[in-house]
Amino acid sequence: MKLATLLIFQVPIICFFLIQSAYANSSEDEVGMFVMELVPYGFTKENGEQTGVLLDVLNEIRDVSGVGLPVKTLPLKRLLLTVLKDMKSCTLVIDSPIVIDNLDLIEPIGYELTAGILPLFGVKLTDYSSLKGKLIAVPLGVQFDEEFNTDTSLNKVSTPEYINAIKMMKVGHVDAVAGAIPVLKYLATKEGLHAQFFDQPLILVEKDMYLACSFNLTKNERRKLQQAVMGLRLSGKTQKFFDRYLSLPNQ
Image 1 (cartoon, helix red, strand yellow):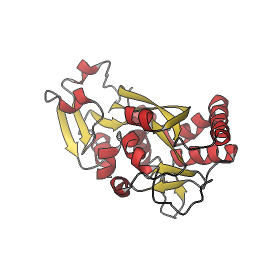
Image 2: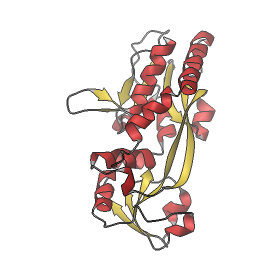
Image 3: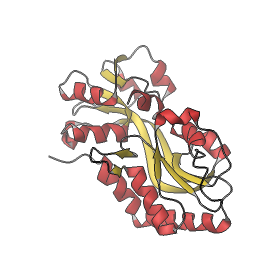
């Protein structure tokens, strides 16, 4: 998870290398489908079952469109070793400059990826200045906002991983936790925490998530994928996937 926290908001940069991975034995007409191997986006349960919200969404897009190979998750340790190859491929990423410049943004899936500060109930974070005087747990390697990253006036305590930060909050050692809000909420449920435990997060970064593909898809493949994403978004089905994984339960 240490490497995961370092790269959590470098997803677009990583996926630029990732989507062209070494599945070179697929035929010219097949479209590779990949998601990041990272909780809660794509991961393997103890029983060996693959799951994750992005894995489920991309599987649904594949099923509806009829386009693409079975969805694969790829581990973070392989990312920087992956070379860009000329093959058809798709993934789910946020709209960063490097993605916009190098991939075809087929269609927004209808979900914004957010990062910021998640506080305990009663800790009101109305704007950036309200962080003053709060003790904030920051998982090692988490970097998502330049001002927050470099602000030495804030009281920040480093933790090895996301789960350690959540545990510190659970026992009242910190006022808030910094990081990707979906990851924080997912791990909070694993610690038995409910929605009432937290107050409203201070969002510092918001990015739309897209189905992004290589430019060498056929017009028919692109059209089918775009129609599938639009249909799932407009029907509300995409949001249901995210709600199932990332919504905190009520008491």
